[in-house]
Image 1 (cartoon, rainbow, N blue to C red):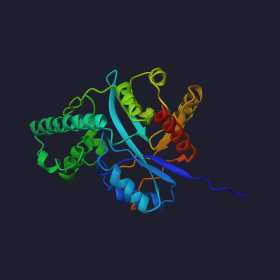
Image 2 (image 1 turned 90 degrees about the vertical axis):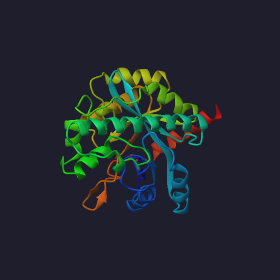
Image 3 (image 1 turned 120 degrees about the vertical axis):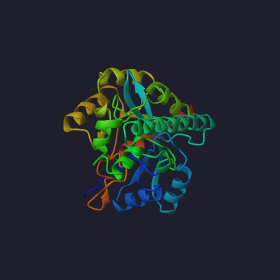
Image 4 (image 1 turned 60 degrees about the horizontal axis):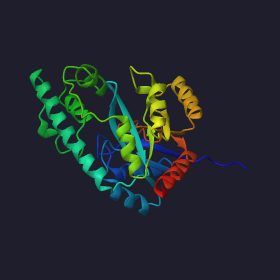
Length: 281
C-alpha cells in the first residue's frame, strides 16, 4: 500500500506586506497545488490573519497563523518566523504598529535618497501598501524603467551599505523570539543560508539558549550544501526542520512559486504540539 505524503509551505507573503497576491489568492493557489497547509508569514504584520483564517475555513483548508520578523544581529539581517501564536495579543499588536511606523519613515528616507541621486520616485505611489518595505520601492524603480530586476535595484541602491540604504529599527533576533514565545507561539530561524558575515552555528546556539524551536532548512534559495548543513544542526540541537517557498507572488509560466519548496506535514504536527505546550505553560 502506497501512502501519499502531505506537504506544507510555511513561508509565503501576501499584499499585507510585500507580496503581490491577496491572502485569498494565496490560499486558492495552495489548494490548487494540492498542499495540506500553508502559513502566510507577512513581514511584521498580523492585520490579515483573522480574515485569512475565515476564508481558509470556508474552503476547508488549513492556514497556520504566521509572521516574519526582521531583526539585526552583529550588523547582519536575520529574519525570524513565528507560528501558532496569539495574533490578537495587544502587546504584540502595539509593538508591530511601532515597527510599521518605523518602516514608513525608513521608506520615506530611502525615497528621498533616490530623489537626491536623480531618480524620480514619489513616496505617494507606494504609501498605500499596508506594510511598506524595500521591495515596494524596488518595484517602483523597475516600473519607472530605472532598473530591470529586483536584484539590480538591491545591488545598486537598496542593499545593505548601498547608496539609498537606510538603517532599520534595531530589533534583535532574541527580542523577536521572546515576543512570539510570550504569545504562545513557536519560532524558527528563517533562511539561515542567506545570512552573511557571521558564524551561523554560533547564532543558532545562542538562539537555542533563548528557546528557538526550529530552523528553516528548506528554502527556495538554499543550496544542497545548505540543506545538508542545516539538517545536521537540526539534529544536533534537537530542533524542528521547517521550510517554504518564500513566495512573493511573482509568476513563473503563469504560476506563483508557492509550493515549490515545502516540508512534510509532520513538521506542522510537531510545531502544533510545541505551541500547545507553550499555551499550557
